[in-house]
Image (cartoon, rainbow, N blue to C red; front, side):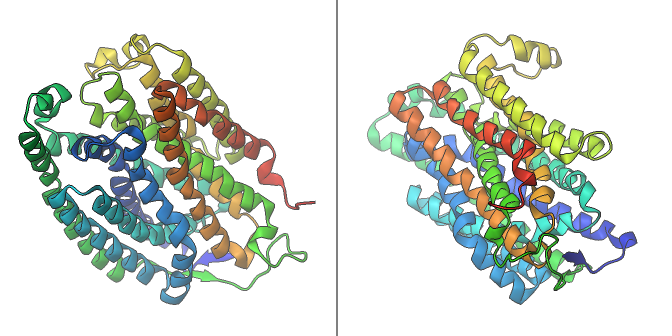
Length: 437
């Protein structure tokens, strides 16, 4: 198996450093939810075209996961993390010419490079947290990292809206339709230029973090040559069904996670909800609540398997709520937070946000279950699980295609039902399968 070459009493510093990295994961990842409706406006895209943002970002995990795992073996985890941050800084800087030209293809290339750097950080950090303590409490530790990650997801849409879309009223369809074509192009170009300073600042912050990782006391993961617990004649990671099925579970999970976070703005915009670019924050807040449950209850009150089972059931209920509830009534939001003064949203959008609570514990539960007993196949298992993140590329794009073809965003959310049903299957059976026979 893999172990952290550090004493138990010295795990605080590694947790802090990796926690900072998880905040960066969240900041970069959940910016997409606000970027999609923004680029839809600036580049004049339909829903299907706009969701190529998620495709370009998340497909990098599929393309780069195995190459990055090879790089990690050669560089070690600390140097690999620093390299990942450097690649991300380059991706952030590539957004500058994209913003200057308002060219959608440039934006997609920049997002791919940004995600490529993020891939090496994810490949290193997730198994790192799993092996930083007892495997039985790994879901609790990953939940702590998830809290940090999703806290960034709460902040990003709010910051994006206040800094980039503060004068959004002058960019409505009605306001733009009254302008000549040249004047309209000029206004959209001005809006695109608003991205330049934020991405310059992001590149500076990422560069500064390279020093933190490079010169911190972050220990290495030592890989022993021990055989897997379920050894037999297994010579490939694909001989471990619970890991392969776990990667599929993450494929479906990341797909619905991205749909919940990155399409809620599009859905809100289609229903005329004000400040639609900030709606991702609602999904992230509910995910934070879900991770709080994981931190406090796993494994003390709820096992990782039970948490996963509950996620599958709750997700199915949310999908039914989205497609069957009102697009006008705000009764659920009135009860949940209307009394706080926070703007309420229609019931159907509330259920999209509640998907964040429903599936919050899938990621922290699947990782320890899927890596269990891999021995010296753990690195390959981690890379395979990271490749499951490609669900965030494919399923939202499929969602966009369906909604564009049928002209109904609400009905397109049916795509989430089989995803949650598979998560339910992995919770009750899939994680325990040790042989394909």
